[in-house]
Figure: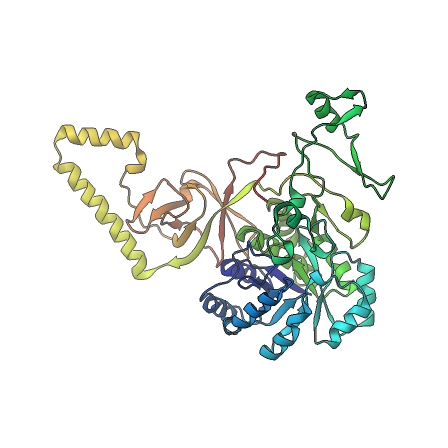
Length: 495
């Protein structure tokens, strides 16, 4: 089975490929259902071409899955030259109106039917095949038994199905809730994720003659006795439980099928799709890696014991409670959950290329020069001024001029800081090759590459390299424990 990962921007595309994806799906400009993802603009096609050359055999799928109005089709036509710059292997489409245009302009690119088209039966698959589609991204509402029936009926059609990530309370994701509440249409890529919002129970009457007090209403809301009954479906109750003053009533669980990949393969699934073009680099890397290892077990390339630590790391990625969706039992998909997705870790930095040779020497020489210049300056100062300066450095150790020293076996890497890293803390690395690597403070140092001096801490936008007693493979990430994380308490991280 193919492993297909999300790539909301060129950086995520790089990590998707590095951590084991066979293919990745992206969005271009404004024609994707994830407008809020960074998507791809300007001359980023050059970086995409570089990545395709770096990872030969990896595929690139482009999502053109919005519902097109005439003016949007006009805009698509105007941007065709830009689309031609990308090495696109397949287009993911829901609107049949653009199919003839894509077939004419991109004859070598394959057509994949978007999950938004809600294709869940073999007869529809046959129709789409006759139109030139080579793959169906199945509607999420389909079961494994139904997938098996489709594959038996149309064996030469590729079937793609979601295996992991967020789900929504909507048929094939075609939701009107966002447009109704905020005026932002999900079908144009502007979903506000209203199904994740929390709602508060205000005035609830126990009976006609007694209006509950605030405390009574809260107690009732937290009792588990409340439920919603839809007007046309008497007796069908939707339970409501209010947590800390607010509750989510439509928030679905996250899909997780990593324990059931053999079932998906036996059903006839050709491509496993991970949801998450709006998710972080860390999410893309860790989830892709876990499913890569699980697939390697299925293919006999890796033992279950060796893969287990990688799969266990899914718990360290922001997620909600999990479900198998509609694959085995519709009732599993009907169960909702509360709270935002969360993780105890935060991505602290991306580790780049190793610094060697003249570049390394330049940083070292710069540090030694700055140290010696500072030493000479102190020696030339009046004794009282020098004493005042030294006392100030004791109060403010960040101002100390300390160069790094060369150490045998240590290596220097570019380090793009994304969150605060304290040089006195133990840090942890993850990579495509190893599960995790904890490094104590004495085994690394943070250095300003412009001055060659040690740093006590670094954060986003600060120039930094890391000098370390370890060999770090390509695409290594540095993670740290999130200081604001509280075990057992899911924070609102903006979802």
